[in-house]
Each structure stands twice: as structure tokens, then as C-alpha cells.
Image 1: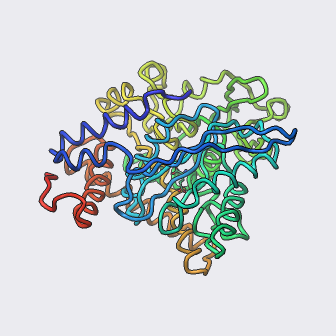
Image 2: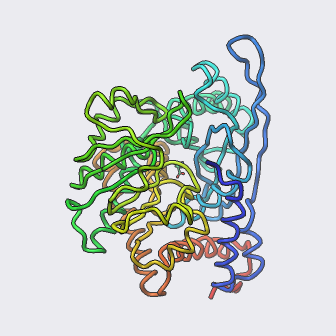
Length: 434
Ligand code: GLU
């Protein structure tokens, strides 16, 4: 499922904008690669007494606007290039949401489902022991991502606090409630994605009650995408997921729409649904790709990168009006080139669509740093306001500049990052950004 050239693809995207915006070469050079990279080896004592050495990374793409920010992935096919690409996307995501944060990403090459609880804890603590001098609430703030959980963030926070000897809960976000986690964080990415879908439906003058969605994935993001889409009045016709037992993907469907809360109750912590329980409750189990073929108005890739390709676009229903990129980088450059010419499909770009998670993370950090906590309503209102502002700004820019939505999002984010770099004196203040 991994896109081997994901980093090359995001660099290529940046190169195109550099040409379009006539960026000076010094600005282009500073943004084309991450500013800092940490590569570490993590020796972890396994339950059987042996030691396994894992490879880990933390990559800070740009911190001109504030401390670097981004998740840590635990994935068996993790690669430095994927982390580099994702760190760059975090820079754009934070800037587009107008958060005073830069972009980073981390990772470990590991399948977390093969580790015991104790092994996972030792791996998380080991990661912090290697990275703690390079992170901090004023430096770089990790968070959960694919394969990592709030509990893991709790262990990481604890290890950092022990090493520092002072209570710094804001060093990591996405922590469990009770040790500095924020209300609303678990739900935030899916909640935010559906705010952008709701705004897009309004923009297209479509009634959510008459809209159907189909979702790829049923992990944390996808679950709250489904729950919130149903709350807006729409129907979710299918969700696909990866079954780790037989290593196959399936789509779970129901003729009148699925009940996401029921499916959530029969799903494990890695997003694997219990097929037998689904079948015995009136659901159908179809092929992994079936989610793409459903007759729906809204398609939501909410799992991994590179799943919307030129080929898959040929198969989607002509009814599709919105592709909401809840995953990071789900659309390949080839598919994107087709979509930008197809004015019938409104593509909500990833770093807008899935910004709810990092927005809530930012508010978690703010609450940690002031040691005062808001109720869920207050957190959600703040997320909603930030998402809606970002969405409107993207649509306005796309309309004014007559550009594709993804280009509009890039233009806004790039301008903000470049302004910060100029104001800080990293590049000439008269460096071109026309
Ligand atoms: N991993 C999430 C993302 O890709 C959240 C990052 C964060 O909360 O810092 O946006």
C-alpha cells in the first residue's frame, strides 16, 4: 500500500508551486528538504529475553512558524522518505489552519500488533530516550498517527518527564484523558473532516440528508468520519478495512446504510472488524475494493496514502461529487492531474480535510501549558471555527485565483511559511513571492 515515491511526489508538487509563484531559489531550497533529521536505533528487550533492534526517525521539515508538530507512525513498511513527505505535509497543514506550529513526523519500522503491551511500552520509552533532546513543548511535539495510540503517548510523556525532572505534559499530544489529554482529541480528525464535507455540500448546494458516503478504512479517523457523517443526516453505504488475521481487505456494507457505532463496537484497536459478527447482524462482506465502486456522492479515503490512482478513478460512480481526503496523500499525482481537470468532483485536499487532529492537538498543548482544561463543547467549538475558517479561505482563494482547491491550499500555506521565514531573517525580506 505504501507509495515508494511519496517524497518525490510532494517535492514535485512543491517544484510546480515554486514555478507558479516564481519563488526565489533560496526559499525553494529551504522548503524542498526537511531542516533536521534524527535517525536512531532502538534496542528493545523482548518478553522472551532477546533484544530486537528497531529503526526510528524524527524528521522536522520546517519550524519557522513555531515548534514542529506531527505524529509518530509505527508501521512495518515505514520508510525515511514517507516520513520526510509527511513532515512536509505537516508544515502545510499547520500553516493552512493558521496554527503557530511547524511541521514534523516520526516513525518506527515495526508492526505494533506483533508486540505485547510490555514490548510496546519499552519501545515507546526507548524512542523518547533517543529523541528527548530533540523534542519538547517549545521545540517539536509528537502525537499519535498510524499504529500509535493515546496510551503510547502517555508512556512517551512519562519517560520525557522523568528525564527532564519537570512536569511537561505538552511535550506530546493525543494523550489519554486524565494525564493531560484533551476532550475531543480522539474524535477530532473525523469530526474535522466531516466539517469540511458539510461545508463542501453547502457550497455545492447539496442536502446532506440526500447524500451517501463510502469510506476506506475503519481506524480511529474513519470511525469518527462515519459517525459524524451519519450525524449530519447522511448514510454511510460501506467501509473497507484490513483484516490482520487473513491479511486481506474487505468492505462491510448494508443496503440501508451501516450503523457506525455498532461496527465500532465489533472493531479492534487496529481497525479490524469482526466479519462473523457483522454477517450475523445483517451486514454484507464484500471485496476490499468494493468501497470505491459504491453509488455514493461522497468518497472518503481515510486510511493510507496512494489509493486513488488513475485506474481507480475510472471505476468510481458518476454520482461522486466530493472526494474528502481524510488520509494523508491518498491521491496519486496521476489521479490528481485527472481530478484537477474534472470540475464535477470537489476534492477536499488532505491537509485541509484531516487538519482536525492537529488543530485539537494544538488546543491540547495550549491547555497543558496553561494547566487549565476546557469542556468538550469549548474544544469542539474552537476546532470547528478553525476548520471553517481554513475551508472558507481555501474556497475564496480558489475562486479568486481561479485555481484547483489543492493549489489554493498550497498557496495559502506556502505564503504563510515564507512570510515567517522572511520575518525571521532566514531569507531576504525582498525574496520573491509574487
Ligand atoms: N497525526 C496527525 C496528522 O497527521 C495529527 C498530528 C498531531 O496531532 O500533531 O495530522
